[in-house]
Image (cartoon, rainbow, N blue to C red; front, top):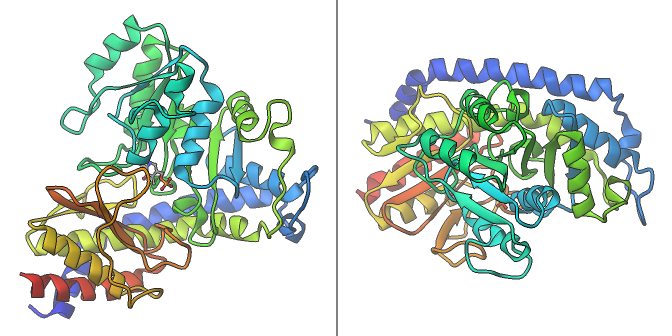
Length: 411
Ligand SMILES: *Cc1c(COP(=O)(O)O)cnc(C)c1O
């Protein structure tokens, strides 16, 4: 079959899934728009500030708009939060105290968090250094091990936080849907009503009509160069949730006692506002691109997750290649289709925070931004690549052609 025909067939196969994506985007867009209107956002909120940043209206209103957009009481949104890992670490270190235990029900956390919580040795400022334990119960066939979770919650009184990771990270699993997160929270609360439920919300925002905060999560966190930044925010992260907890986190982000009241930003806040406004639409582009690739991988006989018609709660499409060479050819084809650095040939390399060499295709406007079409994966068998993003669906179609050509040639 010719490549154009393969794409047409894949699009036909994806038609129903695309309709669901559009419907979801409309619901999210309306909530985001209302948040802007409720807080009477105007050009004055975009103005840069300097020095202490007292009375920085742009910073303060951004917190409020994000809180509403994410159905949370409060939020802390800062350009100074370097990435998603930093946002998550702030959330944990901001609310946990010595001798607390974090119980993860979704296995070990995302690779870059292992060092931060102390699972990669007792390094300075890891949570372990403050006598905060991180205990992970592995997923069992993609599902939470409720039996083990219940036992732990009953027997270990030091558990102060339950940790859930919504997205798959670098693992062959499906994302947790918000419905599943809600059911898990209800289960946790039926045993221990006092524990804080934290959700690593990276890659999940606006992929569904509601967020984990709407089903009882106390705190969520994520990156602004993923979904919530709409491909426009240049950097940053957010934490959202219960007001008292966000205040505690702000005492970690700046200083106990000062919290949210300090911190200036000498560039404009406009990209953060505009990025949030664009986010539901850009996430829809990402989802359609993932669905297209899912259909194409399926037609090539590759193992891929999620399937075209499966529920989605993150923007990632996983695919398993038979060989390392195929995986590398795929990455190079994605890179060659990028608007930026299309002439660069990606190779596996050792990255800070990751245990295996990683190969990445990221020809992005914002360095490492994964709402832009990108792919990555650790070089370890089985050769699984994770792809995500696309600022426009049309770009994904063009990248799909590049990938099909490369994979057919590599076979
Ligand atoms: C991206 C991501 C993070 C944070 O990664 P950063 O690269 O630090 O932004 C954490 N958890 C999951 C599941 C992620 O996808």
